[in-house]
Length: 186
Image: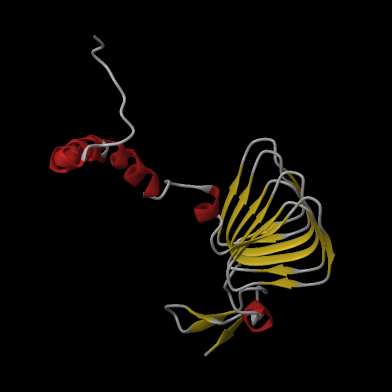
């Protein structure tokens, strides 16, 4: 006598009992569905979520002309022309010949031209040939810069009027010219 037998045909008299037996395994498969739910949840900090709103110029691209964006730009290739964006990141192997404008500019590669930005970061691998017009600047050890750093970003271009000497009133009623030693009586 055999304890285990397999019968492909089910007797019709036990149809209710067979239905109950089939329901039991479906209850045991419910825990298997839980890992599937975990896979549906979004993965934190994926590459797609980090690059949302960022235009990327890959290292295989060389662009000649102006780049303008209302969002961020990351340059890993070469650009021969001006670049204007909210934030511009020039990667370590990248090269830009022209002026880079933005609220924030981070340079790890090479720029031959000028940077005009509110916040500028020159990393240790940066190579800057030209002036940097900024409000805030951070230059890491090892960065190369051949040009002037001027904290003039956002100031008006009416420098010719402000360069004129203004008379200064003195307690004795004298007006003093700031660029000359002559004083005139008021």
